[in-house]
Image (tube, rainbow, N blue to C red; front, top):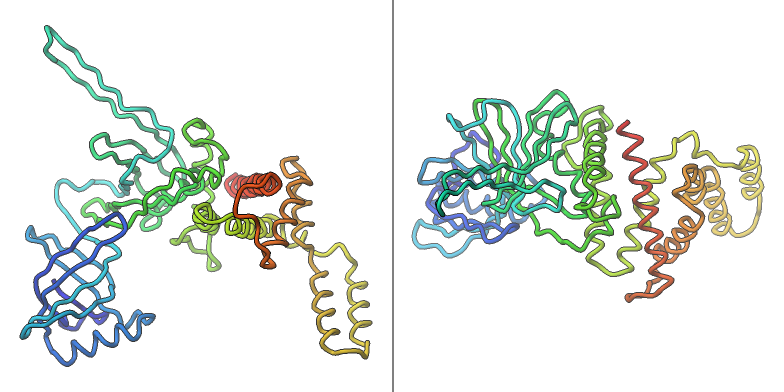
Length: 418
């Protein structure tokens, strides 16, 4: 093992032997018996890395070579100094991921990705079928057909299937101009967060280039199966086969088409996916946390659905300006005058209730949804708690909020994937 700085031209700060422990799906750590190249400088760098934890240029990285010759990179990691005996220092720390570059005849000859989720995702896939031919109590032929689903989107075809031996779900796809490295390996998973209402992240990722491959072992949190309220389908995914995969294609198309402020593709999760990350986690919290999160997300999506031209106030600009001048000329308390002027400023654009009303054209959004949003939003946004247990009125409002949330999300997905 070696501990290195961000200045790759420098010699390693530490060299020695050690082990990497994989404790769980989300926790890995290393232990190293290291010899410093320069005791004083190495100690100074360790102290600086701890004191400047937010400064990436001060952080240190871990590289390791296995007994089989495979070279692993563990990335930048916080390092703790333990006991030392002579010139040997005990170093340890957490690891967020492991990466190795490999080559050889077993590497895919085409550019593409392989993604493995280390559990059976709750997605509608045909079962693996086994055919057995027996003669006189002896099996003479056995044929296994792998169940799976192939979808076409973003200029590629993605194969999903279950591995019966590993109890894992696979996704395999070639890259394309619309589905390139390094974005493809992240994009393929994002729709599952919205469809399943679960935090779905792959455990193993292979980025294949045709003559070599880069492989990552990544943290993957355990799935919660009781988060159906966070699914954009509002139904059990296993019972929604055609609708599930049609929506998957729409979401992936939306993600592929999205661009940042500079016109580039997004490597990080789409903002709608990030919204659902928060919603999924809120399902594990209190009623108040759920209401607060969902009400905020509804407000955010509503603002994005309405074009800027339609956000203009229903009041005449001249009337707003006349009122502003009238208040400015008032000679009373300056603080009160300032608060009134701030309120007048809000009148220059339409509020979220008005934006929601403008989205009622298809009938899916009704007055009862908007009323529930206003009641809950005004309560939780101003610090008033809601009941921590089930109550008929609260349950009804939470159900209406859920319907409103997913309808707005589906409308955004359809608008940006058609």
